[in-house]
Length: 255
Image: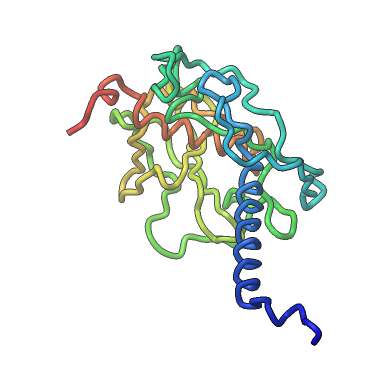
């Protein structure tokens, strides 16, 4: 008699074991791909964390960006390059950090921002996505209250200027920002405010997160016809941080 290999071999068992091995390798691959940004991990003070996890950081992968914007490789060791005005409240990790200056200007805590690229976001055709309505005659307000020329009221009741324009996300056909023309007593030039942090009423536009004295320090946008990703980060962070830092009373528990 001649023996055959498959006569005493369980094909069903082999199939299930191959599936489990494949599934385990898939989980490891996905976990490593998930570690392309934010790794290697760091402690609160910027030193390398002792527990980096059971999976190694993947090898750098280079991505070619569209519209001639070069390449980016991740993971990298760039980390946080700017000096943040924070101090530890405890030597142990996980404890809160206290601002050492003006947190809204320094961009820390709720007012923190990410160092995104200082270029405008583009649509599929390579054009800036967010533009002022005055630069595109195809847009108009079809419903609701047109806020242009309405006075702007800050969180302390001060009238700091008026709405001079609306900035729209052209592909999405959505208003992203309102442009404020500041009165001379509250600064110079114009500032943008995220549409989600403004409330349009019949006779005014209210912005509750910051007070009148803060508007002169709202980060400016360099170009009158476009806003960069970094500028969007800083502008949104400044207004959002005011919900906690605009007044010392907001730092206390609210009932």
